[in-house]
Image (cartoon, rainbow, N blue to C red):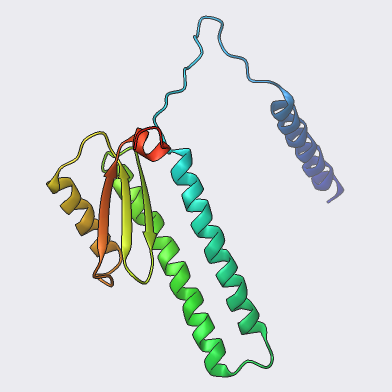
Length: 167
């Protein structure tokens, strides 16, 4: 039994040493390979800031709802309503993210989706657009949100308009 334990410890030590060696060793590129240039294609900072703002606002609301749920003096109805509101906020967050990813996968550069009680606003970053594009995005939004909203707004803007360089 002692030999098996010693063998296991030796193998474990060997694995740990190899792991540390590969973590510590820098990755070396071949000398003939040129550095890869980063492109400007990707998500826009302005829309990322808008997403963070919406998520922070909702996180504050969720904290308030958590306080109601944890409150001893709150009634069961209040706790149930707070829990339902919390689930609804999570539902909106998930559906917004899913719709953003679907629109980006459809070939657009970036997208921002914001759902409120008044409706859903979809901001799509594209150089050119058409009525068919808007209808396609509108249909995606309706399907994502299970036809819950009557007002769905699709707005196309260029990168310059989003970043504020062109009004």
